[in-house]
Image 1 (cartoon, rainbow, N blue to C red):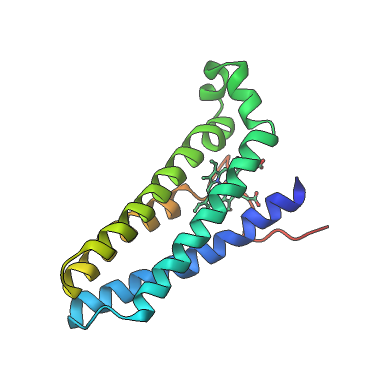
Image 2: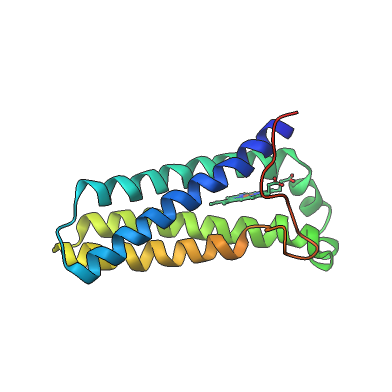
Length: 154
Ligand code: HEM
């Protein structure tokens, strides 16, 4: 399980890297009104792939690392404990919501009729998704739920 946790920790940097690259592309596209390019498609495709992998790994952690057992034992005690509530409810739910936004966003970008519309959809959907992700990461500066910036295999 330690290996899975390390992968989940490291892949967070992939999600953030491709998320920020996607946002920069979307912003520059909206401002300069340039054509929607292969580079734009590539950035949000890689962002989506990282989110898919992160969801899979997150689900493994959720079901195998005692979090689901805590929920089964009773919602009350989980909700009263900040640490348990964050990982079983808040982190998981917000990240799934962000994952849905990324998928809906990619379909919306594909279907948008003009290049400007594509860039605007990219900015809207992926912008909200990256915001949710940033707010739901257990950063080391967050009291009670702090986790390390990097973890490595023992
Ligand atoms: C973009 C999506 C996600 C990002 C960036 C992310 C990021 C992280 C980070 C940085 C940690 C702390 C890792 C550590 O302690 O070294 C963590 C822990 C965790 N994440 Fe995620 N996560 C994402 C999605 C999910 C999803 C969708 C789920 C579940 C459905 C999930 C479930 C968990 C659980 C259960 C833990 C605690 C693991 C443990 O200590 O047992 N994550 N996540």
